[in-house]
Image (cartoon, rainbow, N blue to C red; front, side, top):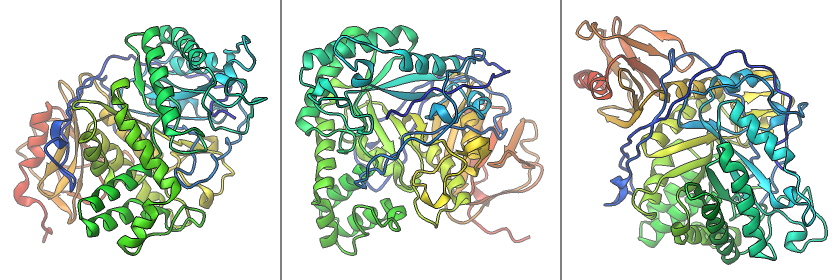
Length: 541
C-alpha cells in the first residue's frame, strides 16, 4: 500500500509570501578529508522570516522501513482523514528543510504543517497503481496529493516506482507488496515516465527520483544491473519530457554509508579506525534483536559483517549508483544515524561524485529503536543534525517520519517522529521548527562555524543573521559586554525562550542556542569569534 493517502485537512487562516533562496556553505574537515573534500560549495536562496525563534512545530510522517535490517516496510499508520486539502493557498517561506507525512494523519495538525511551509516534500507513485490494467489510467490520488502539497506551500517532488503487476509479468497487483520489479517492456516504461513528467512538470514538480532504496529487496527485487537499465531509461524519459527536470537516484538505505566507509578504511589498512567508525555509526541499533548483526568486537567480525549477502548487495548498489552519475543531476541521500558521523559521510560522498554535484537528503531523521530512547537528547541531536547537514553542503533535508499515531507504543518506534497523533508535540518538533525559521530568509548564505571551542552554522540574510552554535566540549562563556549594544541581538533557546546576552553572561554548552544578529553574516560571525579569550574555560565568579 502506498504511503500517501489523502486526508480532509482543516483550514489554514494565515498565508505568507514565498521567494527564491540562495546560500553558500563551507565543509567541515573530518577524518576522511582529502583534496576533493572542500570542493563543494552550495548557493541557495530563501525568504526572510520574522521571529524565527518561535516554537513552531511541524507534524509530518513517512513510510519508514527498517533500513538494511532485512525487515518488511512498516505498515502505514492508521488515520481518520481521507480527502484533500481544500483550505486557502499558503505561500510558504522558502527554507532548506522539509518533511514527509501520511495524509491520513494530518487532519488535526494542518496549521502546524502550513506554519513551516516553504520547504519540500516527496510523494511516491507506482505505475501499477496509475495503470492497473493496460490502457486504464487512474491519476486521481496522485493528482490530489500534488495539488494539496502545492496548496500547502511546499515544493512537491516525486519518486516514480514500478510496483508489481501486469507490467512486470505478475498476474495481479499486490497492494501489500511494496517491492518493485523490473518491467517487461522498457519502452512502455519510458512512455509511462514521460506521461508522469508531462502531467506534473506544469504543476510545479521539477525533481524526480527513480525508485526508492533500491538496495533493499523490500523495495526493489531486481538486480543492480536491472536497476541501472531502469535508471538510464527513466532519466532519458524524464529529460525528454522536460529538459529542466532534475533526476535523482533511488536514495540508498542509510546504513549503506556505514558499510562503505568502514570498508574503505579497512582497505586503507586503518583497522582500528574502521572498527571505531562502524560501531559509532550503528551505536543506536545495538538493542534491536531483529537487526542484521550485533556490534563487531574486532576487525575479523567486522569483515564478516561486510561479507553478509544483504550488506554486499547494498555496497554493490552503492558502486552502481556512483557509476550512474552521468544520468542523474543530484545525489540522493538517506541518513538516520548519529549526527556526529554525518560530516564524514558527506566528505566521503563528495570525494566520489562529480565536483559540484549537489546532494539532497530525501529522508533524514533519527533512528533510535528500543527503550533507551531519550527525547531530550534527540531534541539536541535534531538541531545538530540539521545544522551539520546544511553547513556541509546539503541543499535539501526532508525529515521523516514527522508524526506517529497517538496510540503508538514509544518503545516500538524505530524512526523518531517530530509529533505524535492529535497534534501533540515532541521536543524534536520544537527544535525542528526553530531551525526551519532560523534558516529561512531572502538570499540566505549558509556558512559552517568552526570556532575556538564551539561549532555551528550561520544563516545570513542581507540585513540579519541567525547563528546556531554549541560547545565542542567544555562550556563556552560569552561575557556580559556593552561593546556590541549598538547592534540588535536576540538570543533564544531551542524552545524559544529568550536569553539575556549581551546584557548578561551567556553560557553555551552541549545544547545549541540561536543568536539572531541584525548584521550581515561576516559581521555576525565576527561578534562571537571576538570572544575567543573567554572561550573554553570555566567561569570562576
